[in-house]
Length: 136
Image (cartoon, rainbow, N blue to C red; front, side, top):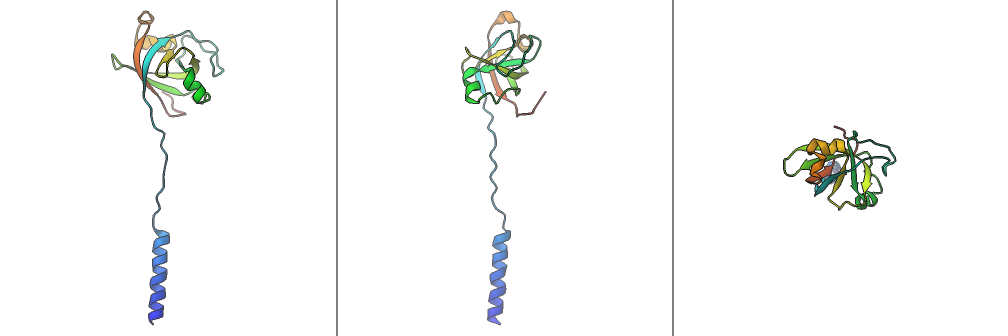
């Protein structure tokens, strides 16, 4: 009988180990908030291959970031905040900006006008990419 008890306990322990929950690691995309200057430009044919107009909610992201991401942010929406007022506006990445620093964005008149008159010229902004596929 002691052998049968040992076998039952042995198999019970194996079942407990096999059925124990395992750790599942999920890698989350980190939201990086950039800060810099917001300026405006007249859109046309952008690096993403689309032709846009001043009335489209278009963003030109820094060329260095566009190149680093190999254009994978094309069509992705950006959440932009005016640092002085807290106002939030969304724009869609369709171009790159060769003169922009890493935290800067160039905005179509449609986007910039929601913050201020083009006469203002430069805004202090913070921004981050919305998840791929998100749309306002």
